[in-house]
Image (cartoon, rainbow, N blue to C red):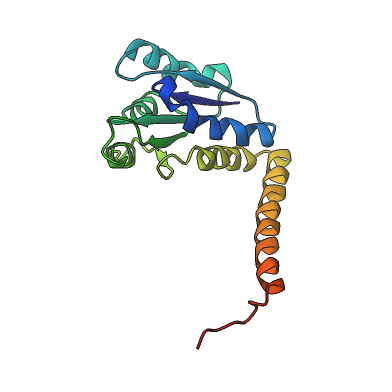
Length: 168
């Protein structure tokens, strides 16, 4: 199981992307709000006990100062994937990106692009898929779907007469 956590319900529009991709892979998950700043006791309890609840990977999204992923990673033996979120009080999202990305040695947080919760869900599935053949098979199917979608696009260009077209 995967836990998806976020600092506020305002992060749900972004973090829902992780939930949607996990549903596609039929991977069980829970989703909740855990604020590092407003509910530090809840965060501490969540992070120190997640592994005892059967959680295998934690996806943590946060905006602004974005301490949630790093603080959870400092308390949990599980892999943590951080999702920086461009929030209303954000500096174009850079504050969130750097807060999650610049972790000290010994406390790693895998960090995806700004607002890229879908990629966090895919990475979590890949982590589980490294030891679960059924999830790995779904990942391979998904990768084929991506290839097929691109093929449709380049075939459409070919049909429009742009194959090998070089403007002189």
